[in-house]
Amino acid sequence: MESGCSHYNDADSEHSRCIIHIDVDCFYAQVEMVRNPELRSVPLGIQQKNIVVTSNYEARKYGIQKCMLVTDALKVCPNLKLVNGEDLHNYRTASNKIFAVLQCWKCPVEKLGMDENYIDVTNLVQEKMKSLNVSNVTLSGHAYSEPSIDCPCGCHTRLRVTSQIASEMRKKIFEDLSFTTCAGIAHNKLLAKLICPQNKPNDQTTIFPEHGTSFMSTLDSVRSIPSIGSKTTEALISQNIVTVSDLQEASLDVLKKHFSSDMAVRLKGLSVGEDNTPVKQTGKPQSIGLEDSFKIVSVRSEVEDKFTALLQRLLVLVREDGRIPVSLRVTLRKKDAKRLSSHRESRQSQISPSIFALSNGALTVTDAGQQKLMNIIMRLFNKLIDLSKPFHLTLVGLAFTKFQERMTGRGSIVNYLMNDISVQSVLNLQNECDTSASSMDYSAVSPSSSTTTDLSDAEVEPSPKKPKKVNWIAKRRCLSKEEVASPSKLKVGELRLNSKELEKVSELRLNSRDRSLTPRASPAKDNLSDTSDSMRDCEERSCDDCPSYVDKEVFSALPDNMQKELKAMWKNPSTSEVQRSSPRTTNKAKPNTIMKYFVPHK
Ligand code: DGT
Ligand code: MG
View 1 (cartoon, rainbow, N blue to C red):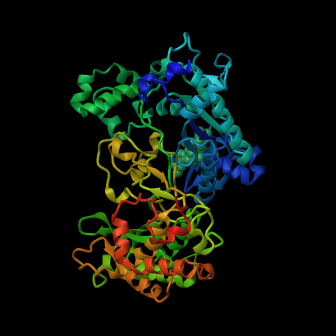
View 2 (view 1 turned 90 degrees about the horizontal axis):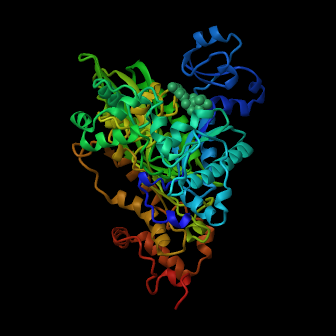
View 3 (view 1 turned 60 degrees about the vertical axis):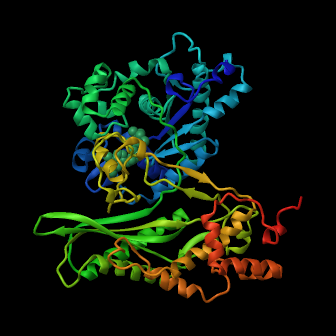
């Protein structure tokens, strides 16, 4: 049977893929219940502002629903215990732990919001089937509907194996972290996600490809399809296409009149449960940011207070992330009193990595470092605001927008040279935006809201799927077109001891040197960046022979000629420029370089 499948490609129509979607039950409520087990036996609601954003299943018995007003919730359940859920720290931590557990299967895992993940286990299933008696494989959990005849491609068996893996994953999440979850199993992401809540809480459901069309026709609104956003829904409704059945019946020609040809075809495909979008491995966000919105602030000192508070919170997030930021962006939303409108403006500055220190693998910032960051922030603020005139702000935002890569690997020379760095993978992230909220809405979304993991004042971050979450989706979306909205790419760098690592040692140093050598752009051309801070910081750093991240004791223990060679690399920008512009895949050690100590001579 397996050999019969080997010719299948990834096209959805061939049902060759094995996808699991896992959603944590009443996520915020479970996090609170794990922290305080006494809450398990009482009806529990999680409150943000005056809304109950979720509740445990005990509370749901009383009719508590998501996003109910607190007053209404207390009417239906006067005993409802309310816990404030505006600080997302614990939810984020739990979310990362669940993601980490799922990584253990070594399959692509794509995070969607905080409590959902897709896992593509196709290869693992192929592998398992080699050692299985395929006629004996049973389904774990529920089937949406039992298949009538076997599909010749063998997908039924593969999905049964997938259901076993889903069960193992859920068990492990429960054993390690005490969270119960639901899973959906299908040959594509769309069906896996939509079938997931069929038997909740704490259970799983598999849907076989042949039931895709009939299952989709049970969905009331086209908006239930995750990749159909509110604008597309409106456009469809304007054509009297309200339910998924309506979409199934709509003619392609009619759809093509209102949407692009590609989109019309995609909509038709979705309506019958077809979806060939891949599971994209999630990496760390490209930027980490926070925003604080308010009615109005018109005094500089108040702005400074807001930024000070934001910076404190932002530093906690950066510490959790572990990467060293090298760029900081300040955003303001200015209110134009005359035009009764508001608009956003941002400016960013490079920052010196030396502001951050690594101690026992953890990122720290001294008080002086924080003061430096505040100086940079207020300098950017002064550039955005003409203080000789009155100003009115309704939002301030801060984001770290670029990060230094940390070269690691057990055998890496960089590891020996760096102070106190814990060993971890090298992640080179290329995703431009959070991809979880991709949607087929064709309306343009303000680019100013696109590239950070911005969280609002209350840090409200719902899971990205239901109609109520449209604003959140719009806020987090990068671009409206689906194909550009999911560019998450993660590259795991090689952890071999090769010349790339040595280049990196010099690059880390030279990145800052180059900046300090770059003449400052004129204000007119320098709309979005400011190099002055990095210039100052780099000047401070350049007094020493070797970079600040180097453990001098270890460095001094290296042989003389090795020391010389490293120093030469740190000192010589032109050499580095060549290295950086040349393809970085050259692994061969040049003769008479430091590499001769590491690369065996043939
Ligand atoms: P479930 O999956 O039905 O058992 O329940 P939850 O609570 O896990 O719901 P889900 O998966 O839709 O969302 C995950 C978390 O996201 C949820 O615990 C609270 C938060 N959340 C969901 N919807 C909203 C919303 O509309 N607004 C806000 N602020 N947070 C939300
Ligand atoms: Mg959930």
